[in-house]
View 1 (cartoon, helix red, strand yellow):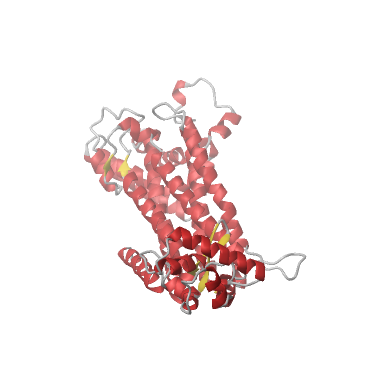
View 2 (cartoon, rainbow, N blue to C red; view 1 turned 90 degrees about the vertical axis):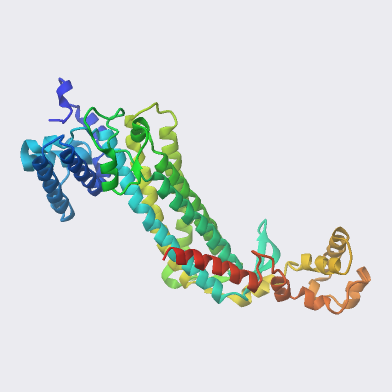
Length: 459
């Protein structure tokens, strides 16, 4: 018989029972549900709402159920609808009518709200730890490639010279923001909805501060209607994870390009690549492609929950049962992607000669050529036009700026001198950019120090 069957004269239709059930996915909340119930029972006993002996009996019964679940000795029932009712029914079967006292001064609305928050709260540090490890990988790659000159791009066109280290630190800074966003989410969500009841608390003298402290929350939520109807923490997490996956997807796209024969800037380790069933020469960047593809999956989870929540009046509505699957799936997806992505980056081989060869073409030192003239006293816009003429000359004659003769330079401007060749050398171009945040070895060293300080604060 359903725990809520008193009001009803008919049994629930089998189709409705299956449709209504959430045990298929919320079973993973068993530990949080039992932990929350033990805290609630302890509070009921302390407040004299139930006898202390009854509270102790309930807590011991819940501990035994938890041990049995973790030992694989419990099979959840679809008839009991969700994880909360499954555990309550098991408890009552084991300890008798005392088990029926557990739900005093509580609703499934505040019960699921606290379970869900506790689960998300436990998963965020797991993701943060994975991201910190990826940050360490990027720092090490940067340290190994401080002088590895490569072209930087805008519009996927070669634009200006940079280094592989500078590139790695760009992604390291993105991931640092991802970590701090998750930390902010974790801090903001750490308020306890337990004791909100269905929406209007209870007439029993519950102590919400006791249960909040027992469950590791900073405080109870300030409004009981908000307590049972809020899913902002889940939306914020999904938003954070979507941004994170966007960063990994961008990085994946770069790696996919870089390991192609058209670029060949990097080689992926065989352990993080796959082959073709028909083309024996192929080495495919499947890890990067799957990360790029799974990004859409996480985006979908965010859009799902935003759409579920957008039209719901206060307080709880059954629509909100749809909150868990997208969050569970997004968490699972991210926790699968980040470690394998970190391992792929850690084991890839950088090809400095190919990067240098690409950097030598495409006139990526053209801006430096204009700056050379500006430093000799010419206005930038005039210098810009002169260098444009030089580039056209190079294209017409199959030259680069580096291979032009001094006579070629001086035919367009008398300000050019022998020192122009040193000024246009790619390492000069890179290391001349000592502005904070730039690609010079000195500037990148500061960026690495900043990320290492960030990591040290979290070690």
